[in-house]
Image (cartoon, rainbow, N blue to C red; front, side):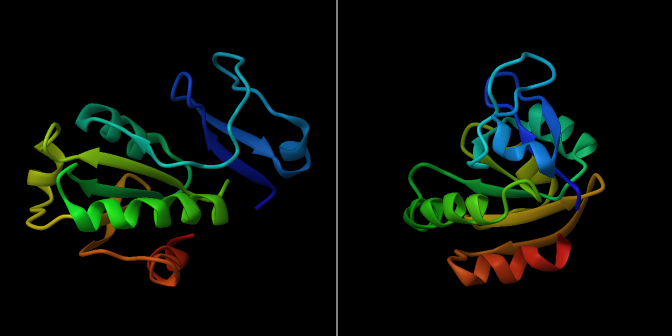
Length: 144
């Protein structure tokens, strides 16, 4: 891939950054703020998730979680590390199912955490249960 994709933390815009410019402190094309290149997971509601997966040019891993869920909290730092390893090649979103249950219900999510991967606007993989470390790489790599 000769370009990387980053989401602007300030405005939510999706930005394509040429690989040759990644080390030059790129800014968002929409709001002009500096892009965070750490690819940290970010919270979205159902409507924002629908917009994101419809327009993302890279796969989007979505973590369906809840604040009271101990396995969800255990997975969270592993998602941060995954984001760093896959920066520019995928995005990681988090949906709090307690506050935003619509998409989880539509996908028949019965357990949390559940991880789902969207590619081209469609779910291409969905797995319930905590995945950590290399298990996350094994889940997402086939879709990159």
